[in-house]
Image (cartoon, rainbow, N blue to C red):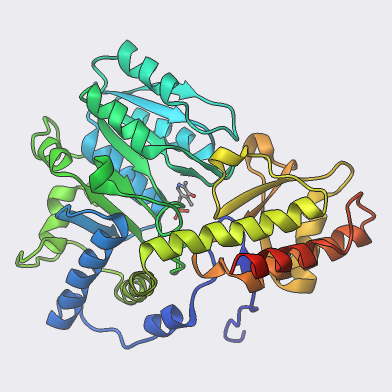
Length: 393
Ligand SMILES: *Cc1c(COP(=O)(O)O)cnc(C)c1O
């Protein structure tokens, strides 16, 4: 056996995204103790950087030592108790996992179903809030990675507030890529991931909880069912000024990487990052449409960092992905669930959201689809996208 040497890929799927060399370099720095004063100083900076990324002053803002799915579970197990009612507005794969979480907390999920590929309809959410006055939480996914749909989180949170309901928001794919203002929008509990628009390595989950959510957690009738994710215990470790006590050994080097990726975001500026994601999305879309392909999501709710492209008739979608990987070192995503075999998912997340990747992807797709004999407009996509960039400097 030899040391593992991964190939150099361009990652344009649903995550992980390309990791910046700066982040990889941070990861390789010497490991120090997790209670070392220098490490604690860095953890405090991570908290401040996360507060910036989430646009919040929430004291309870930290990175859970596990991937986005654990951040989801952290929000549910801390806020939801047996016997509670939780409204879940579902429009893709991840809302289904929210339902699982609610059930495993011993609570009752009220599902507000939407077709895959559609944004969450605030009217439907409002009907459910009216019909379930005892509901404690409204949960939804802001950026549905399975379909490439952006929902109106501000409108949904406002409705929840009007019905005295807390909110749990999945911002795994939104954070760093789409506008998100936790305090202004009044979000109570939010979780994200590191490997989407933060372009860090996978395995950590930024979370943030409002004061109202913290009050609910402190006044629980029952113990949080998960020892590891119980925020009452985790805060003894992450708490500002708290004398840090051992809870678990923090993933030290991955936290160096998160620190660096958040610093990169801060240096760029949130608004600039959001604008960059939109610009590259529009260039990609120009090329995709020039080829004669189409995006499945209607324009108003398209998620710039995740583009769902319909597979043309007669094309073997898996074969295209294999050829892109083999010949171009380019990874794109397949469809999930109801959309398996019907779409490709082109991610433009974080460090991956750049003109070079857009042009590489369009050129590679054009070449492979043409060689497969697909019914597309060949040889125009790259030029149209370049023209877009030139006229939208
Ligand atoms: C990726 C993703 C998750 C899960 O994150 P993991 O880090 O894979 O556990 C949850 N929700 C959404 C919307 C995602 O895109």
